[in-house]
Picture 1 (cartoon, one colour):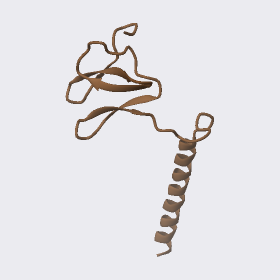
Picture 2 (tube, one colour):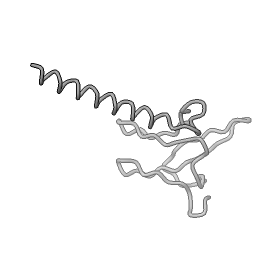
Picture 3 (cartoon, rainbow, N blue to C red):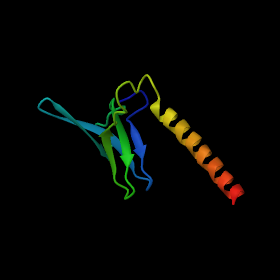
Picture 4 (cartoon, rainbow, N blue to C red):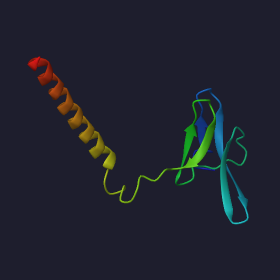
Length: 100
């Protein structure tokens, strides 16, 4: 257990889930269950909880953002480029309207 008890996740429908682990051979398997017995104190490193539109709640490994993503935030650069392109296209549209 963690410092403040087991790790909990409350789903949209109000159900509380706890993270569990079982070992089979050398592999560790993590899963969510509504039972608080033998629950882990924290979310395993490299995992995230995902709730599907249908209400299904599950654990999955975090998706890698690519090589050197820890050093550079490429998502911010992409957003800035999209904003600049959006600005340029809106300016072009204004000029076309003025010409007509």
